Image (cartoon, rainbow, N blue to C red; front, side):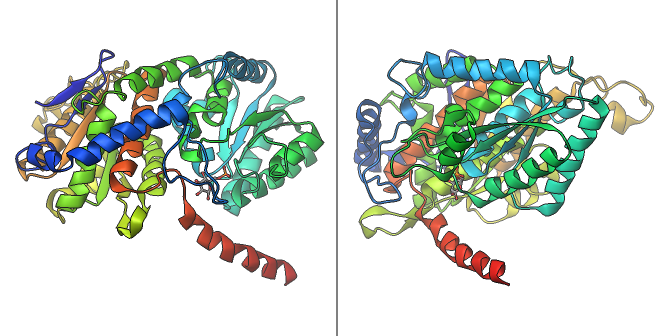
Length: 478
Ligand SMILES: O=P(O)(O)OC[C@H]1O[C@H](O)[C@H](O)[C@@H](O)[C@@H]1O
């Protein structure tokens, strides 16, 4: 077995990718200089915030500051004052708010959704206040412009308000770095108006770029005018890296998620990701193997396949991280790069996608995510032992079946020399989640360097936006 095991127990098993029938040691040697340069670039960005070639949307050089996020220091984006303010907001939500609606899309949604799913699970909003330890219900909106869902959300909030009787308070957290994205802003306006009309108390919190110069965002301007509290999407951190800033942490704060442990996990992982020795640095190794897998072996699709329902949104968060960071033109006119991300959930998608992973084109890498210990058990009872088929899994814990299914899937793919790796989280705690998500951020950084793409811009998403504006203006004129 080939594994990197960190002191926390976090494990990267790369046995079925870095192998004689996969990416070989000889392959890695060919890229020696490129790898050395990527490691140098990582040191540089840590020390200076500079990534060569990275420019902002306006074409000006822009700092890349995600590496400092796990470190809570006075001069950093995350410092004690920032954390305390978030914790205070969480306390206020616990004491005075019945429900929170978070409005955001892309990087202003996906990270917070991961924290919510892992910490709260599917049935949070059906729990009693005591079962939620006093924390409010939480809903997401602004992740689409879907009239049906928005109206159903409004109806749900009104129902909860009438069940409680007087004094139902909803906190609307409006998150947008650019401060004018159509999905969160439009849904916010619809929901706010409907709640106010229904006599529901509404509090608004804005999360946006905090500057108040000539580049002030519309949301910032609005928040100042309306007197809404403002939290920051800091300069130098793109949306897809922002789960470690107030964008993600604010969601953690209002549900009682351990945001300090989350950052601590990221911090410990960051230390491992500084090593120039790829066999000690999971992010570097992951990036190298996937880069070579793509360049030399045509593995241009990545199936992110966590086992467990609550981790589906982790795969969805990764989709944006991978697609927006690496799917673009390479520098110096070299061509195009990118790996298409696909969300799969084990065991669910073993009954839908696995056929293709096992026998389809040899163009993909499967990244499994395993939770070693779910810290809860659901044992299948021996109800029908007279039936051999049911007896075969009676007495077993669902979590054990889940992990055995992952093993079987990995073994089956390996049997046909299909590239796959497994990340193992000891438990699904805030700490291990922080570790894993930060490792993926660093891996994307390294792969961006190897591939010669700017992992921190997304010029491609501007093209449709330029077309959408005039089309909407036309509609208003109708
Ligand atoms: O936070 P916002 O400015 O509202 O942006 C939300 C999202 O939409 C944009 O189109 C970008 O493609 C994403 O990178 C971003 O996370």
